[in-house]
Amino acid sequence: MEILDEHHIPYEFIDIAHDNNLVEQLGWFIPVIKVDDEMVKSPLNWDELLPKLKASL
Image (cartoon, rainbow, N blue to C red; front, side, top):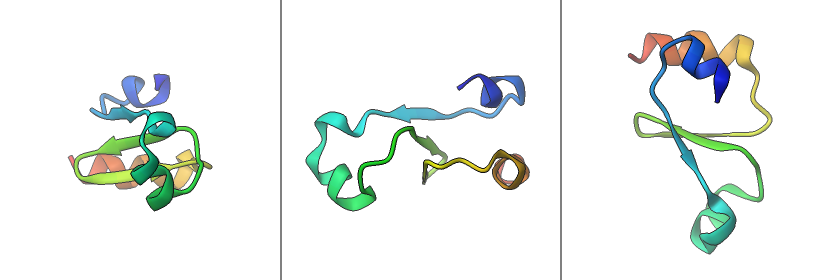
């Protein structure tokens, strides 16, 4: 995700489309990203999310 790259926040994109367990756990939300051990799903509110992610680094 470009905004996370711009802020130098490491993340992993989670493709839930082929993982029924994740769909069941998270619901059908795209995108889902993983930062550290936290799964973050849409809708993404960057104004709230970016400071929280930066603080966790």
